[in-house]
Amino acid sequence: MTPLISRSGAGRKSLVTLICGALATGAITAASVAALEPGAASASSHREAPLISGTPQYDNTDLYAFVSPDKPDTTTIVSDYIPFEEPAGGPNFYQFADDAQYDIHIDNNGDALDDLIFRYTFKTQIKNKKTFLYNTGVVDNLTDPDLNVTQSYNLDLIKLKNGRQQRTTRIASDIPAAPSDVGKASMPDYAKLRSQAIYKTAGGGATFAGQADDPFFADLRVFDLLYGGNLSEVGRDTLKGYNVNTIALQVPNDLIRQSASRPTVGIYATTQRRNAQGYYAQVSRLGNPLVNEVVNPQKDKDKFNASQPKDDAQFLKNVTNPELPKLIEAIYHIKAPSEPRNDLVSVFLTGVKGLNTLQPQAKPSEMLRLNTSIKPTAKPKRLGVLDGDNAGFPNGRRLTDDVIDEALQVMEGELVGSKNDLGDAVDKNDKSFEKYFPYVAEPTSGSRGALAKSAAGSSTKSALGDALTGSGGGSNTTLIAGSAAAGAAGVLLIGTAFGWWRRRMQRPY
Image (tube, rainbow, N blue to C red; front, side, top):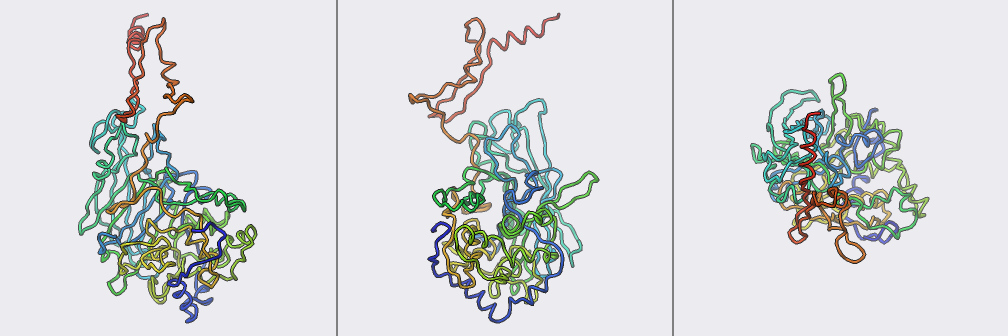
């Protein structure tokens, strides 16, 4: 992908043809846009709004929804939380919040009201509160007594009618979540722990919660005034090496869609946080990628996160008159497309006619829309529908979809004749995705990297090891570093000096 300023655009015909046809037949018109009623809208990304950026446990970072590549009679939904998890960020590693409801919402009839909600609620357990350690020894299974801090969750299915709750069914109870990957010394077989956290549900579904590699790939220096007009530094995956907390849910298509003849569903995710009065208030919402991060201005971001799809009109102008193309024109002198941008309404608010609209008269609202009847392709194209691959974004969103490039090209008018090949030069994730549920890559380990080397090429002596020596010249404390060949982490042994200190402290005064 040519970085940001290329204008050479390859022939992206599939989505362009669909949009142009819809515009010509009046399927997307000013009248249909005006049908939006006053209210609010929302979506989420990494640190996209002032309030939620200060409470990362509740922050949706990304939402994915796709027909499962190995089980096409099911849909997989992946919702990620807690942006920029540094793998070695202990001793308090990364947990879902105990005072939150993590919800995945389904609208299957186009009225912008929930028909189904899958709700995750978590509980944290601490075995030994007298230690600072996350784990007190090597962890080889999720029930290991050495795993000091654990989380489990319940999964409920809430069925609604006209937006009102009708019935709640418990799908899974007390399911263990996969822990943070502390490091190779603590968790030498993390893949085993991860597999133990996959729970099969009735009817051929599955659920998983735990840490994973962040599947989003992008050069986020775009926020430095769109690379400051200097493209010499593009192409760096800013999210490489960071983890997220992931909820993954696989459900039968027939459970979430109206029928085989009405196969499209709308999907979005929210987080509700319990307040001091004991009530839950929505603090984050996520549908299409980058909407609240890039489309909404500062004045709307927190409001956007607290709102519902049925009320998406108050932010309509942010979609029809977006800021980003004007910034690109100011910095790179690429002319912004004419407004109002009704082509963007189809991508974000209505679905594309002939691809993934819910109903002919569906209420415009911001959410991912997935046509569950479109089978997955063996070789996904990263630009999805723009490159003729109808199984990808904006028909849902796969892990491999390059939504930064897709969003840039659409924002710059790809759908209304302004051919372009814009992008951030980051075309894929730094880790390969899995072939089976939960599909996301394993998290980066907290013990990543090699020992530091001195200028002479030898291992640099530990500063901690230098300090921990006994008085009187005796070697009373020994720092034993595991060999690099064995891949073991350093083990601190406190010897005779500690024994002397303990005996001294036990003496009566």
